[in-house]
Length: 308
Image (cartoon, rainbow, N blue to C red; front, side):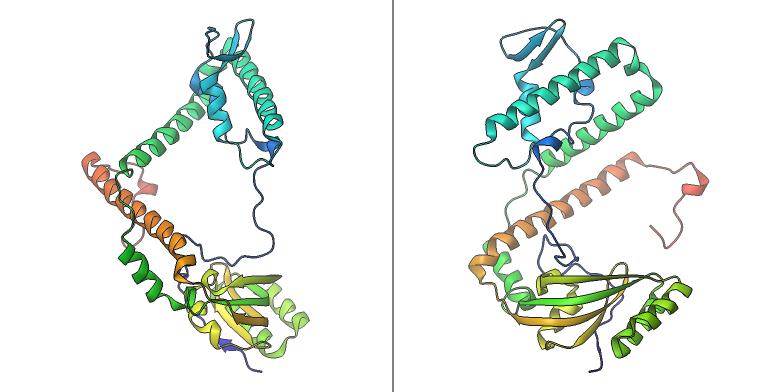
């Protein structure tokens, strides 16, 4: 069976707001584990200071040492999902890690590392990122929730993601590299299924091949694929563009998996809210840039006409 070509050079995020263009491949991300619960706390102690003063809000104290309730609550807020019944154990692990982090931070300060130029740059970068997030959160807090009419309009405008949504399993071979070469080799492979021959040609043309099994739904596929995948039958070969290059996909199974408005509404509302927030912050950033009248003084980093 000849391949069905759904090539398009854009990589528009598919249909449903809040979802990226990548299909749901292989395993999903796991919830953060307790042993990694401090990964999101770099330089917490340095940024919060290394005060050894004790008060009634301290939950751990020692010689010239204390951990406050505020510090502990902040650490807990960064902790991912914890299995039911393990909450107290997870809290104890978090406290122990926080104690160790503060001990190291205090030792660093006592040796003057907080005045080391490299460390000062890192602290300033962390402070800058925290302040930027805080400003963005406060500035966009007043944005209202998407109207019910907007949610329904989006649902009706994207049948490929909702009413005509399909579940599909396929074997894909990704041709990553220069688009023209990847496109040509993907066509050859889809037509002949001769992997050894295509692999030899790919090596000489700077194309990297990656084979994988994909189980997903049409709302997680590139837009042009999502809009046409329902017309494809099992056993077909489909070619489409992705960010990395070009894909040849052999369809194993495909069947309807519609999503009702009641099921889709919370997802659409969340996605539209994210889009509204992004648009608001982009407008606010344009205002801030204009007010700051920024000039790039490094010639090699100056904007080039027609390019970002």
